[in-house]
Image 1 (cartoon, rainbow, N blue to C red):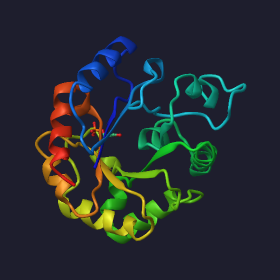
Image 2 (tube, rainbow, N blue to C red):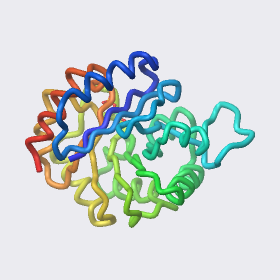
Image 3 (tube, helix red, strand yellow):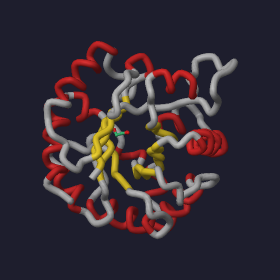
Image 4 (tube, rainbow, N blue to C red):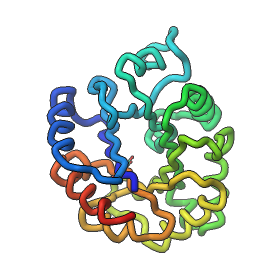
Length: 228
Ligand code: 13P
């Protein structure tokens, strides 16, 4: 099982260090735990991944960080393709694939996010699969260090997670395309994580707002520890 926290644009460096200290007081057992803090809170720790990075070692890319900056903190895990970057920051599939390929060549563990907007979900599973397939364009689904995060846009930050049936059918379809673990994200909370982890082909969760409280996140890991 994989349990990952995406802080998005929350927490300072000081808060992140305190959070990690608290978090590491527990035994994760077989659970792979990852924390994605903002750039300013990157620290050298095997749990830490970056929420984004530019596909270059360094260069004239104002406002970005690249491989050189990640290497300073020995960061080897990266989130790519989050819907907030696709929709708010306007990242294209072509650019996302460029990032994927660059960081794949550098051996990163890549958490690759996909997920459909509400108007697509309303059309049914076939439309959802077509949409997600487009988000796989240029992505090597056989990459051995890949984790897929299925995060329906309409479930992110809304408090309304996808239903078990929706998660099940979507993960089943994605599983036909890749052997990579598939985690679910979108309003995962303490009161629904157990049910979500029980769904077939769900290999973990990517948690946004509920992960900000370290006690809640620890309890989530406890629940995941009971799963194989
Ligand atoms: P929420 O858990 O806040 O819905 O966010 C999910 C998410 O986007 C994780 O990457």
